Length: 167
Image (cartoon, rainbow, N blue to C red; front, side, top):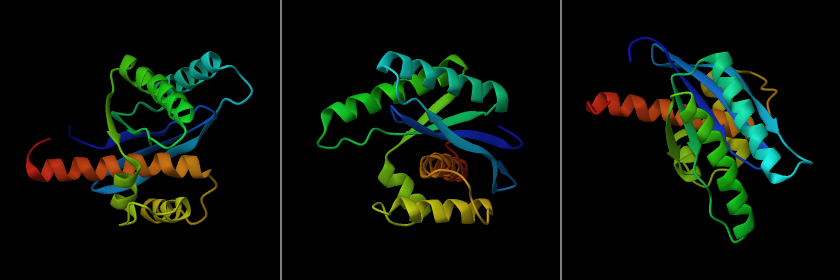
């Protein structure tokens, strides 16, 4: 794809889903938008509906070319992992309906891509996201930083695939 590429990054959660939109212009990442989709206090079906609707709205509003989403982190709590997977599915469905390709990245890959360590703390990721985007005092939540990190990771992966001739 010629010209600037805009990526919607998503950090899914059943109560808080972070989103970040980043555009690459001449090899440099620029912030378009960042924030959170909050769904607390509703039953699960309603939460998933809110996630789907808000992601679809973000796509209509900002017109990204591609999407990237954090993969499900499997922890000891299987109920949490299931809810996270459902939230991820709702966000992915909104992207698919809009015709966006969706790339998935494990949290450790995203962190390693930005910080250099796969087990980096959320605050370290947030600091690097702000540095990369040239934002002096970010006012977004850590969930939004994580989503921006996923989008930046995707741009890095695109750049590498382009250099390798596989894009």
